[in-house]
Length: 250
Image (cartoon, rainbow, N blue to C red; front, side, top):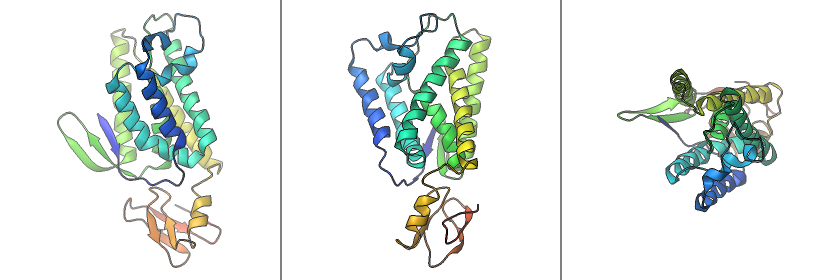
């Protein structure tokens, strides 16, 4: 299954997102990327930190790069460059540690950005639940599906794969992906609850009557605005209120 995000605009240039994509592409040209992999039965070292910048093949890199391009730029836009960098490292290390604790004696090395992407998708699930997406399966495609539905299906599939492989005693990284996704959701909820986000309110306030538009807090669609009040986004069907202080009530 593959999830494609429909247009979701952002304010900041996703410098780190593009930087991570480029860096992971450069690692493809190293002679032996497997030597940078994380292996649980070996002594914990720096490979715990940098193994998720590597990919085992061009196909894996391309898949991860597409997911980063579609989803990570919006997360970087919401939390800012510094915290995005911290979260990127956190999700990667968390996925590796999950693999370590679930398969402590494993000699199977793991590399790849899937754990980081899972954490980012978990945050995206909370921040932009009504953004439209496209769900692509092997023989069928679903269009204009709210992202909270498509990502719910995605994480259920990852959980199913992990349970099946665990039952067959196969060492897999699906457990790390599930833990990272749930951690991303938790972190995003904490940020929202504590009004930590530095964009959704502040940039709405700045853009409202300078550009004569207000941005939908769910999908960032610019909506023409002549005065403060209640708004309805036709793109994602979100209803919200915008007052003179820039606060929104969904």
